[in-house]
Amino acid sequence: MGNYKMAHTMIRVLDLDRALEFYKEALGFEEVKRRDEPTYEFTLVFLGDGNPNGHQLELTYNYGQVAPYDLGTAYGHLAVLVDDLEASWADHEAKGYQPTQLKGLSGDGKPRYYFITDPDGYKIEIIRN
Image (cartoon, rainbow, N blue to C red; front, side):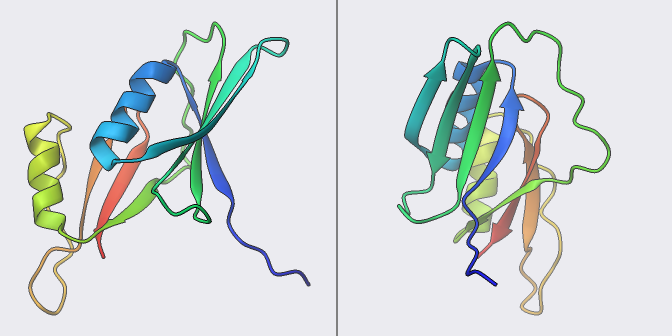
């Protein structure tokens, strides 16, 4: 059996510029690479958190897609870690991302997570590191 490592997670987006703005502004992700395939009518943009060997988020934009994608009932959410959960929540609130209430009290009485939603409806769990 091989030594497997996570490479990336792909999600489809309707508006690539809007999605990029969200993931860069809301979560501080950086564009790692981009591949445009005009023949096949799609663009891939890979985002990372600054760790060159870390897991990446692949945004896939299919030319001309105008109807929202059906996210289905099996999909759950993306999850990211943050050191200062309360400051992150306040920043997301101030930027209008409508974070859920802080939830999941730990043994020290501090909340452990909250959610925000990206422009395409994908849920993102922000977890205290």
